[in-house]
Length: 77
Image (cartoon, rainbow, N blue to C red; front, side, top):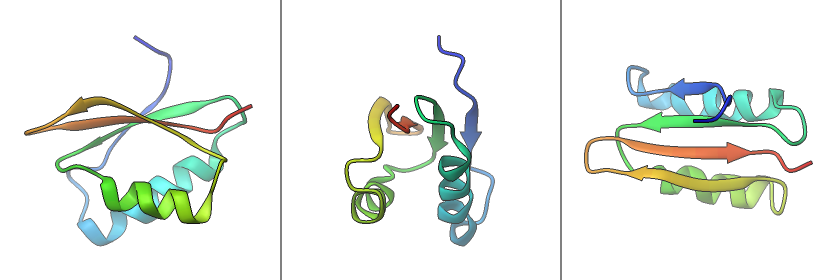
């Protein structure tokens, strides 16, 4: 298990989730990451990251449903 903090957005209203996730990413130090826990595949979020942070993030699925999705999102060093 890693030392990465966990951001569980399942209890948040959907319209707040992306803002919370992007704020968490922006606060990361280079070389660090966090684990996102969600109730659906966050593929639209991936596309948003790919558009806004091209080449400046990592995205690794840790669990892919059907109830819970966990993704490690990182900021490369």
